[in-house]
Image 1: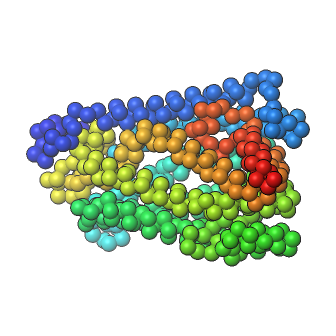
Image 2 (image 1 turned 180 degrees about the horizontal axis):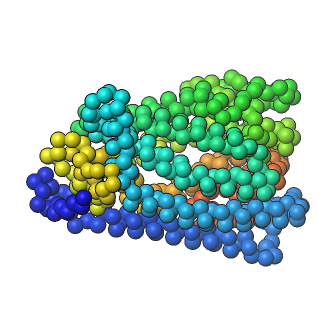
Image 3 (image 1 turned 30 degrees about the horizontal axis):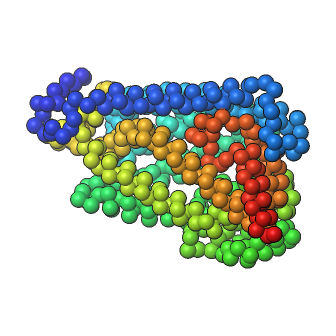
Length: 473
């Protein structure tokens, strides 16, 4: 069945719907522009890495041998080539999903109605909220399947080639299933709340959704330690007495409210190293150190890394990031609330809004059109997110700049603690262990990197050390 509608003749059409605005062309155009930009900067990075006879940064001379530099370059080239292919793969997948949204909606609603009719032993039509939830599960499953080959290649070909992958195939698939379950459970909770708020709190939508999202973020902070991390990793109390004593002394020196120190079995999945602390601003903190970091670094280097992490706490970076995210979320939903009830936007993607329909969805599963009696808010959210990608691209530069600024501040704090030399040694050791890229294109770094490059950090630490020495004298 093929539907043909003249939107301007519909009785429920409003001139505020921007009937002449080419939503589909703009959304596809934005997606194409973002794809081309990301491919361009990735190509710049690839050309830089492939340039022969590059000069090693002065801060790294005599610190990293030629073999490690060659391995780092080879890993960087392999990673950026994989990124170029992955970006193209994601671009095609996302455009395909936009085209398939009507088909996904019709199939998910038909399957949901059939399943519920069978269970209840009578004809059943899902509500619009239930239809949105069914659509979400379909889209979530679609992208999980689409991303599976890429993730498999990244772990078992790319990472394994350079000795980083420690994951078994059974663990990989188990993690994938767990992540899909967690994502769907959390997504359904947010989706149900969004639908309820849109229906019941139309006049105070932005304020109400902001309160909900803020509370949900706090809830996720708590769940992360209690459920999510233990689902994938095993945490054991740190059993290295010397390291434990030095960390406790550091926490006391900084006034850091430390309650527990754990080691996490990161080596079960990867050889990459890390350390972090967790806990809300008003709660006791827990330090978690990857076993790979303890294995590859000296005790003083590990303590210096934790001095850097405590610097993030001392500088209030977590609350600042939380405030930034709240502003971003509020602006996003303010714009969404003013845009998503737009007949033309839905019609451009074959979703026809017909309030006279007595059931939420009246089309067959094989139809490329969807006729609904109210706005499918999840489809509207997905389309609006695509529409916002141009501003998000610009925002990414600002956010990444802020993150790098925070990293410099945390490094500076570690230097003020007297950990400058150990911090430099730990950064060099982390570069050796992780084969971090030494040579970074400026534009690529500005767009992708949340941390300054190792040479930039070492140079900054040297400056901080000099300033600290002058103050001491």
